[in-house]
Length: 110
Length: 117
Image (cartoon, rainbow over all chains, first blue to last red; front, side, top):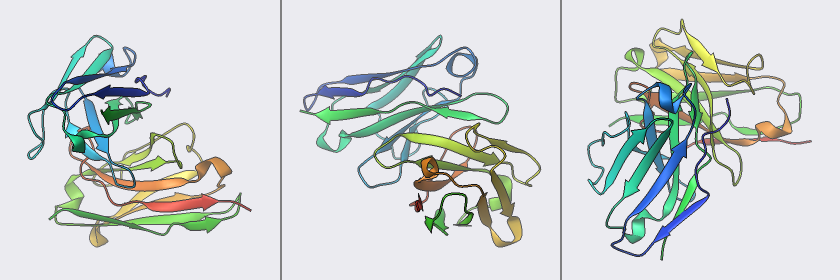
């Protein structure tokens, strides 16, 4: 149950795009289409942003999109806004009723 | 409105026990898998445990298996986490979260567990 690998940080100017990667193995990310992404502002509970690789829950702006290729999933935030500054975590189903989270990425809006 | 409210956190000595509760409302509790996720101070999210709708199937992270037990009372719409043999490294905010289908939504506000002598 090793954590999925994410870059520690990412940044972009308002209006630009930023993409965060999430690398696992064939036993988790590569083996299932059950990758989800969570946004967490300081001192707050996480919020679901993407589920099943590329689906957006109601209320999440379409500026947020997800994809997957092999053992790596990605979250893209387009048209960066100040409120997008937060920590982002990926999560994957890992079989046998287990989940594994990514190490987290701090997104800074310059 | 879907609501998850955790309680039961606090300060406990190493080796001690604590039972967390999560009161659920606003959705048919019995139909959903539920999870506990924790976050140590300044660290990332870590999945802890999972339970199915009728409580017959559970899963645990390696770090807590054999020490923690997840359970639920569907009549009271409440999720539990019994934590025994607590260690310093179990210090974290513990979140209760609903599992609609291999993703987690929504999350409670969390309850802080501090393991220290």
